[in-house]
Length: 96
Image (cartoon, rainbow, N blue to C red; front, top):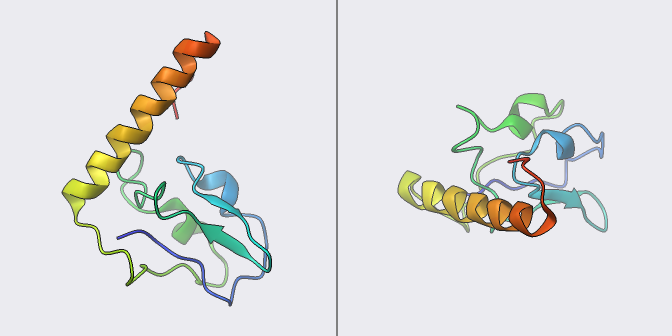
């Protein structure tokens, strides 16, 4: 499952820099999570980092985006291959 940020978000700015997949961005009223980039931190951490740092606990699982672990791992690998391809194009070696 991808995560989502609810209307309870206070725009405290702590979740966005914690996301290893750059899945979090400011929306019109509060931060949003791009479900195509959210892996729940699979491949990076044992637990979703945004959930860990959120002071108002407004980041639940998105019931509209049910994704089992194998799907999250496949998404992680796809995103990482995109990072590797981008790094090859720009000549950088940074991953994540």
